[in-house]
Image 1 (cartoon, one colour):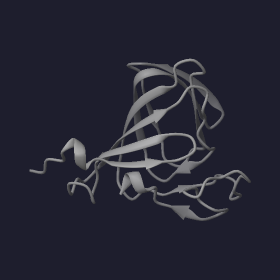
Image 2: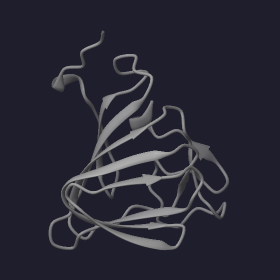
Image 3: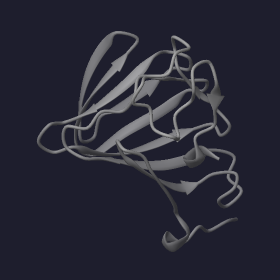
Image 4: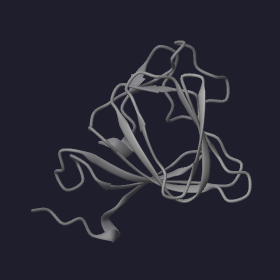
Length: 138
């Protein structure tokens, strides 16, 4: 049994959100990754795809998820299962932002669905056709 203390949680900050890893293969030796996403009001994540399924549960606030062109509004308590390899983008509620908990298999890589990087991509984003493993999932 592994216990990961709150002080050991790993934080990754991007221009859009803060991801706090609670458990992962490199944090407690877990076979799955579990992290929290805090996104400020009006912020939006980048359009991307992910190689593995992700399960998101909103704990606070609200969000809109664009999953392969289908927009889904979420409020606290809602859960969305995002299948692997579908383009996705998450938009925080303009007034409240959101807090979510996310679970996924570790090692899944993020990539640009069209193979081209947006000009304003942050340093943690994949470049063009590159596939990267986000640090909060390892």
